[in-house]
Length: 256
Length: 223
Image 1 (tube, helix red, strand yellow):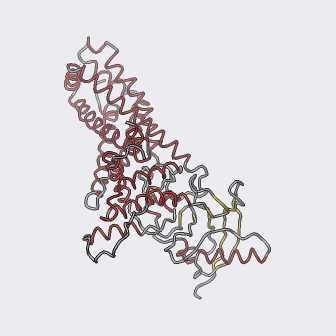
Image 2 (cartoon, rainbow over the protein chains, first blue to last red; image 1 turned 60 degrees about the horizontal axis):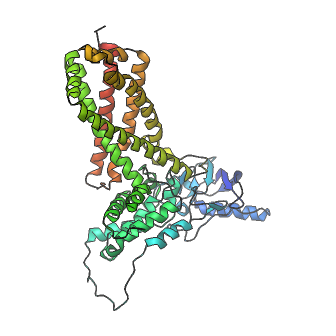
């Protein structure tokens, strides 16, 4: 343990259910600067439970920045003030003694609040179900290096695949647009030979579902890229736009 | 052609319409500014320029109709996008972190666009209407230049003109590079250049257009 404890004032969004109105509730807490942000919420919940109060509902799983489950809007920024980390990787040493911290859920029509800080992100699953896959033929195991893929192309695809689907892009975008997420998923497949056969159908269907779910349109503010814990580039959005135009002009299907 | 209307009505399609019409309007602005530079050549140069356009009036009329449609699509689509995007987040955040992750220019397109639109209406009602339909200019050779001088020497008009073209610069600063991103022309090698070029273009347009009212209000000794 190092450093002095921090006295913080927390203003946390409490909402008992999807249909009820929520509001901010004030909490006072003393934490170690070595605590992670989620550990601070754990400590607060322990305290609330010992007092017989309802603990704060929030999501987390791996707590090492790879699963994409955690996601809070901290002082107006998804995953907090430090770039390229998830909420679970944020530590209290980044705050000062006496700070007031506002904690809100991701806010979007397509991400309705279920309880307190938990939102329903199943819209992302629906988008993935629409085309975020490769229809693999079964058969014998192919030889290594049977399909040649240049290193730069593989790296670009992997950079797009680094998306953990946390939804921070939607939370950060002033239009609650899911373009960065969808474009990362479209790109990771479109770049590789295995993803090419279905590229047109994939982008058409994923965009259609994205629009139907009520996500907003991209207006190129690039807030998504700035807040993405994995640093997914907006060049993926440019690539998805190209894929989409090509698909609309060249695909054989009249209806998506 | 159901696929086409569906494509243009999708979220990406609406971006495409904004970018495509935006590029059209940018081309018009360049032509308009270059033509207006004849104002610095004095009454003869400017009136000569307007007379030249008068000679090819039928062609100009066709272009004007096209330009009007481009404006209408850009404005209609812009308002639609703004309205739908507002609905995509019914409850906004209590604390806004927007200034930390995006530029003011990119967030205020609807506001700067709206003021430019109000300006456009006023601009058409004064210069365009008077040049085309007042009848007066055709009788007097130097009336076009005189109309410009007269309006630009009205203080409120000149000040509003300057404010509007500065906001037009804000609008262009985001819009220029945004159009390239929308078309999918974002590449590590040249996108930074496009962004810088867009900013330079926006500054040149704003300063270029603002220079006319400033010149006639403060430096023109004709009256």
